[in-house]
Structures are given as C-alpha cells and as structure tokens.
Length: 105
Image (cartoon, rainbow, N blue to C red; front, side, top):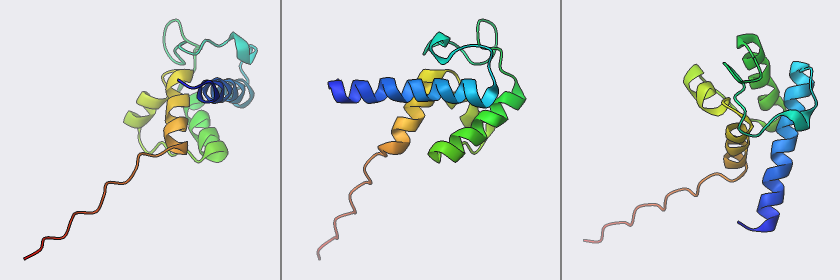
C-alpha cells in the first residue's frame, strides 16, 4: 500500500475516533480507542442504540455516509476499521460497468 494511502487511512481513522468521542461524549481520549475495538457488546466501548443513532446522523452530516437500514448499520458500525472502510469506499466508489456493446446485424 502506498504511503499516501496509508497516511490517509490513518488520518481517517483518527477523524472517526474524534467523531466518536465528541458526538457521543465518551469519557476517553480518541487515541485510547483501538481501530479493531468493538463499538457495541462485551469488550467494546459500551455504546447503545441511542449512540448508534447519533453516530449514524453524525456520519451522514460530516461525510454524507448514508446508512439506510439496521443490517447495513450492523456491518458498518462494528469498529473504527469498518467505519473507515465505508468512508473510504464512499470517497472512491467502484467504477461503473462499461455500457454493453451494441450488436451489429
């Protein structure tokens, strides 16, 4: 992976951690959150459904990331890594498929 991409990913994860601490008023500093630490459940940050809703709104307002349903939320809001991956995919969407080649008679 190129250094610029790695730096961008690290910066994005730091932004996500800051967003978590600021918007959810977590009683810790952003660097204390591990990239792979679960946000919910045992061993996690202890977030609840209200926190999840606040996080969905914050991600939409700040980055334009739309999380349309609970299944998508479960995938994206697992940890800092999964949120950063969703944001990176939003910033760099997959290329559109090429149009079909017209048939010639």
